[in-house]
Amino acid sequence: MFESIRRRLTLSYIGIFALILVLLGAVAVASFAHQTASQQDELLEQKAQGISDYVRGPLLRDYQAGRDPGGLNHRDKNGEPTGPFQVATDPDTGVVALVPGKAGDANGEEGTILDSSPSSSSLGLPFEEQARRVAESGGTVRETVEGPGGEKMRVVSVLVSGPGGESAVIQSAQPRRVVWEAVGNLILILVPVGLGGLLLAGMGGLYMSRRAMEPVRESFQRQRTFIADASHELKTPLALVRINAEVMKRSPTDPDNEEIVEDLLSEIDRMDTLLSDLLVLARLDAGKLEVENKPFDLATVAAETAGRFLKRASEEGVRLEVEVPDELPVHGDSQRTEQILAALLDNAARYTPKDGTITVSGRLPDGWAEVSVKDNGPGISPKHLPRIFDRFYRVEEARTRKGGGTGLGLSIARDLARAQGGELIARDSKSGANFMLRLPKHED
Image 1 (cartoon, rainbow, N blue to C red):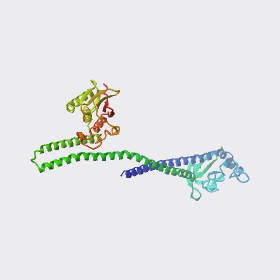
Image 2: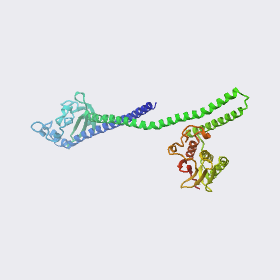
Image 3: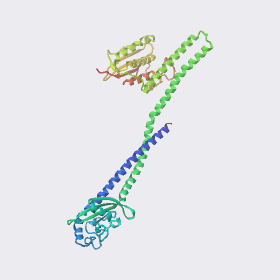
Image 4: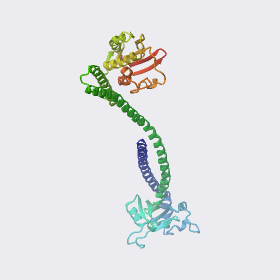
């Protein structure tokens, strides 16, 4: 069961991490694509603006003078550009300057090319329709158009005017695939990185799920142990009640039935005490036990609780000494604190030998008020001390019912102390056991 839960936790962790990676990757790719497209527009506009002075100067003057349309005066003997167009030699980028044509011109709708880069024709430059619109409206236009072979081209068209009022259009173009190739390269980097991240997430998920399941496993094991112990504690008195009832049924008029009835009542009282303790524990675990947080005098509660144990101590031949100061102001629940001290005194009385001593003392360390219940019994061995507050745990090696304890008193006492913001601490010494109740000090 736990392995199945662990696998589901790991898969859920990986799934959530994968979803986060996909979302972050999609945002990163979209942002990168937008930024790269913007950089392409800036690059094309810079190339167009970079030759604008050359176009409005020598090229437009030659054109107006009727000399050499096409910029041959500005090319070498091999026909290569010798002016600014010579720098636009990137095969993926083309630049052309033209005077757009108009319907009804001698050249029809075709314009006159003033000059162009070597790669302009392979990129489909010039784009006459865009050039005419720019010539009519002015400014700078950025468009994506269909180029040779149906390839998408990004075209930036810039209008420039000469000193005599004549105008020309500079067009720079680059395939849109340049952007998508950059985006594709980014994806090729992100995919293996993401897969590596998922692998690490899976390994981390297995480790974290193992750690996360440990408290659950321990809690489940404690619950199973608790149920088994509770069943054991209830089974024994129920069996005795049944046996005694069958004996009485066979001999209803037997004079010994009075003793059997007393045993029955004793076992019923034991079950009632056990069920009450179980109910308190259930409410503590659910956080539904009402615990007050009011100022009260811990010294008074300790003295009164010890006073009620004087008769029992006297009957068992045990001295009970109370050494508490006049006042121990704390805030918490006085009735629950009385219940804690009663459990500690009952435990001390059970293990203190005849002619032994139980001492109740108190003090006021910084920020706290403490009451200790100490006996001079056999004490608590180191192997038992870490588990002394476990439910149904008894110091005896065998599970006996000696002394009538259920093994829940100390566990309930510690939980009640913690519910008040305090703590119950068990200590062992050569002269017996010492339980110290610590509660928050009340400041006036």
